[in-house]
Length: 193
Image (tube, rainbow, N blue to C red; front, top):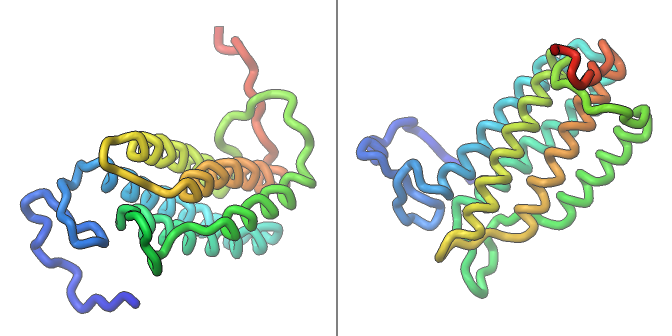
């Protein structure tokens, strides 16, 4: 349970922050960058939800996005406590969260026409915010992959699977929103020549 009665602690004034394990790291540490970028993606998902408020077909999607935002806090908790051998009781991303995302991707994708071209990010405000969230998620994934490859660092395979699947979800969700609003804008190769 989280209990905050003060927002500032002054403990980070020298450029360090505490991991969930209590270990202090510089704020530009790869692990901090990874879960900070997950938090950034979460904020863009919140923005997309705000744009969905008047979108009737977006009600179920908005509920899915709230669940995903909670998942992203789980992922942040997963990343802020480095994995250790034989650990138990730590909050980690689970296979059931990945399975749920896959089911939701399949459900949203079922109504979409097949892609015949790449699409340009944009469309409605909600879809544009989902595309931004998707690109931030991809950046978080790249940081997580780099973290997993770094010496003396470890992150869970399920965390990497989840973040990879989430970018797929956000792409399909943006297309779903555009299908019910302005439609996707297709890439026209070489059209600006």
